[in-house]
Length: 266
Image (cartoon, rainbow, N blue to C red; front, side, top):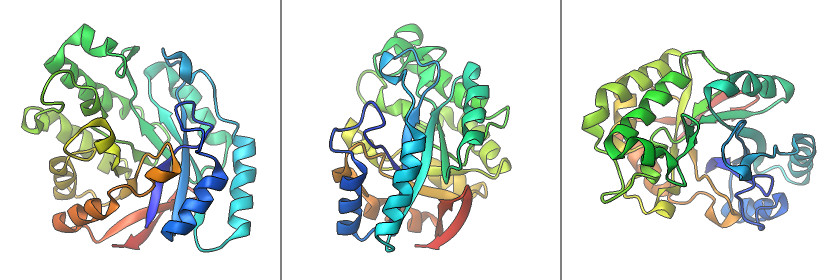
């Protein structure tokens, strides 16, 4: 069991219980073999909550400490970068500044508008908003930013207004295909993010159809992430995610260390 998407108290939206020592205790209880911390960095975010940047110097020291006190679980240090076009230089500078194990790139803001508070859909409406989101994902991949995995590719499904709280895959298949092909060409990975139940969704991010299509197109690099903001959420629904991966045909997942994919059989 390897969880490669978690947030500590250094992420402003994390639980006060999300200390590294609490994660250590939970990782040991779960017999985890790998846990990567990926705190948020959202440069130029319109949300005041994300104006701060984690203290990575302290986090890297803590990573070393955790890996010294036990040897059953590898604790990695990563980052989740929120993409915006004006932020690319800052993002790439940060990944050069620190020796991260793992870099997730995600899209949390579209055209300067926040998804969570509804501003984005207020401008575009439901269907145009969903399409615009996927257009932005594709745009974020054009300049080859420095990252390892694209986080929750269909993140927008968390915030789609109305019922059902989702998108129709077939209506956006061509655009999603272009995204997946670009990721494969760049030799990057996608993740299965299992936090979807927290948002009332009936599918992981991305949906089963997207992961299956990624495999059909030749994509093999994939990671599992609970997107935990509290230690209690670690490896949430990983058993179901692994069943889906096996059903599609995946034989391995990636465990990133020092920015390299180490293959782990499932």
